[in-house]
Amino acid sequence: LPATKAALDLALAAVAPLLAAGAPLWIYGARSEGALTAKAALREPAFVGARTAVTRGGFAVAKASRSGASVDEFELSAHGERVRLEVEARKLKWLVYPGLFAGGTLDIMTKLLLEALPTPPAGARILDFCCGSGAIAAAMGLRAEDARLHLLDADAVALEAARANVPQAKKIFLSDAWASVPESTTYDWILANPPVHLGLQCDFTVLTALLAGGPPRLRPGGALYLVAQTYVPVGLLAPEASSAWTDGRFTVWRLPPSAPPRPNGGGAGGTGGSEG
Image (tube, rainbow, N blue to C red; front, side):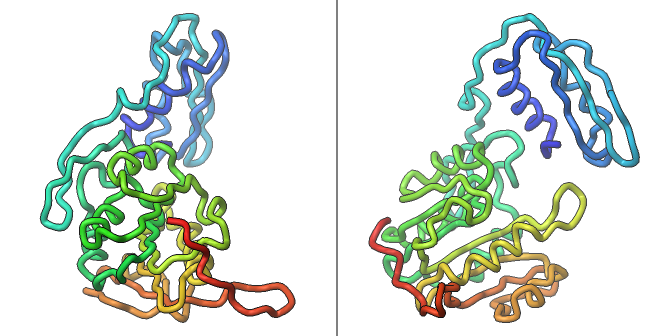
């Protein structure tokens, strides 16, 4: 399920205009996520016949049908909220949408990551991996006006917010981890506050993808910095990682470049071209 009721309402507002009258819609999720109350979101005029269709173990499925009533065409901009986000001692105009991580605030882990970072290299190409609404990239843009910023997230709504919040970004990747990033694209810095939970359960899928795919995409002398709760076994997943900062509860990790695998035993490639 989406993280909040507002995020579920946003998803349903996007889906409703696409469904023909009488078309079924199911919502699946864990009870711990609120699946038993999801049917309340399937309300008129867009939906009729909302009910909990199945419950089994810790999970439930809600079902409804698209009504014959007309609904407004979906416009994402109508669901946005303008707030002020404090970054680098400045209050920035910030766009957020329902369900985005941390909303219009700077979460504690991102704040600690930013505080632990050294000065960015001159003219650095920096990737904000799992960028959300773009807070890390925005901070780097304030610290280094000549930084070439790239944004990556698997959430299209988050990227629309980040596009507005970091207008100087050179490239924006809608991508499940590295799937949409050309292997030839390399970075001076990769920065991340990666998700390590799926619902209430630990899930290191994104983290392991970051650790596997990040170092081969670093330029010589580059670094991958990420923040995680200290219990997350970053050092076991990536033995080359070193602690750049910790307070015992949270740790900022640093990983150096590694040579990407090459066919026929070839060496590492170049710097990834001169694109932004």
